[in-house]
Length: 241
Image 1 (cartoon, rainbow, N blue to C red):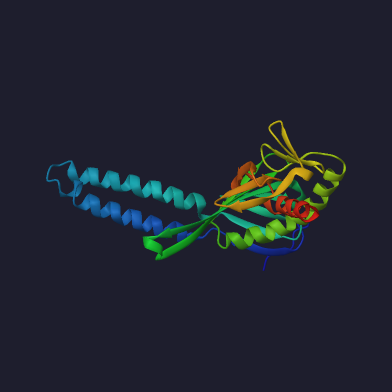
Image 2 (image 1 turned 30 degrees about the vertical axis):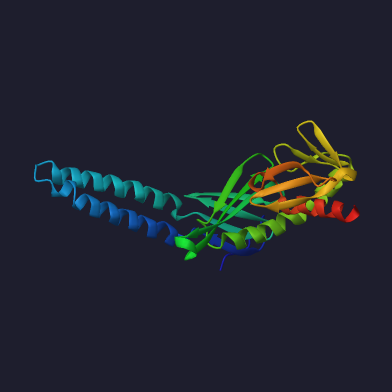
C-alpha cells in the first residue's frame, strides 16, 4: 500500500513498465543471433572463429541488456493532485496544474492478414515550462493511465480555456492553430465562426471545414494539443450554427 503524499495527495494507482515487452523481444533477438553465429563464425575452423563469435555475442547481449535495464524501472504513479514519473533512479513530481497540454496518437496495427492485431499508443505530456514526457505501450495499461490523467488535466484546463476565450485571447491548440471566441486562426488566415462548417476526424487527421464543406485546414492528430477540449469547442460551434 502506497502512502499519501503531502503535496500530491492520496495515492490512486501505479503504472510500471511492462517488463514482458522488454524481455520477450530481447530473448528472441538474442536467440536468433546465437543461431546465426553458431552456423557462421562459430563454424569457422581458423583460430579467430570462436573468439570472434564470443565477442559478437557479448556485444549483442550488452546492447540488448542496456536497453532492458534502461527501461526496467520506468513507472508512473498517479495521485489526487499530481503524479510522479520515475526514469531509472530519478523521480520527477508534477502537479496537474503544471501541465499545459497532452498530445496523443493511437494506431491500430494488423499483422499476418489480420490474425494479429494490436494498438500502439504514444502520449506526449508538455508542462508549462516546456518539459516533455513521452508515454507509450512500454507502460502497462497506458491507455487507462492516460484516460485518468486526461480527466484530471481537462478538469483544470477547461475552465481556464473558457476564461481565456471570453477575455478575447487566442488560445493555441497546436504549433499553428489558434482559437478565439470569434473564430479560428492559422498562419495569417482566419475563419470566423459564422463561416465554420464543421470538422472531420479520421485517418489520423483533424480537418476543419468552411461553410461550403471544403477543407480549411488539416492537422495530424498527434500535433493537436488537448484534442478532447478542442473537439468540445468545435461541437459547441456546430450546435450554435
